[in-house]
Image (cartoon, rainbow, N blue to C red; front, side):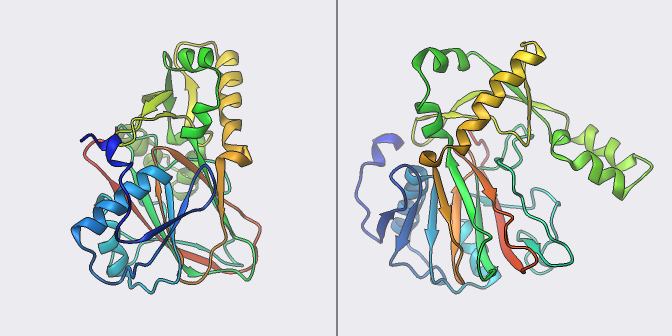
Length: 289
């Protein structure tokens, strides 16, 4: 039986409640602090592939338990150093905003697409939640691609896009850290721009994905700049369509896991100066696609 056909099987270890008709699901009936058997783990991977982002409410997890749970979905490793990490669990990044340091990733993006082999997903666990606001939104780029006319789909499948971390603001950040430019030169040498097809195929579902995002996709290879910019602007706007989105209101004990290949996400920056803190783990595979 193929991986695609496996998605039609029923879930036997937990209840799956669709979050919207197009993306997302709430998983009921699991205590993630306890060991999960092989069948449960397999069904969770299937639920993630099918729904693209899955939510768990009322979980009480230590950092070590979050790491152990996240390993169900992929290899947990230190994939970047843009956020501080827990000393005893270096796979966990601390994503935090305070009155003194208000910040949020309030731009549409998929994580680290500027790597040849980008991460396949992320788990994000609530630590401190504002009284209101601070939601996270996910958009299905599977549904975005499916919404396009066949002629445009066919054209996009012939194109390649260039992805670079330098268009995301990290150039300025590195120069502020080191005015000599040495850190910037080292980063450019270590992480040069990479190319990805504009349309990719999900290795589990077999569905096609629109694989560009405004934070890291700089241009489409081989097109005049004006034409590339116009086409990318049209494609970027698809993530903003409400029908392709799931918007999560965080609560204490909420954990979200998403597929970084088929979605983009946006952290809503409407809660300042309230305190917001989450623990994030990125997971990888030998080959994302």
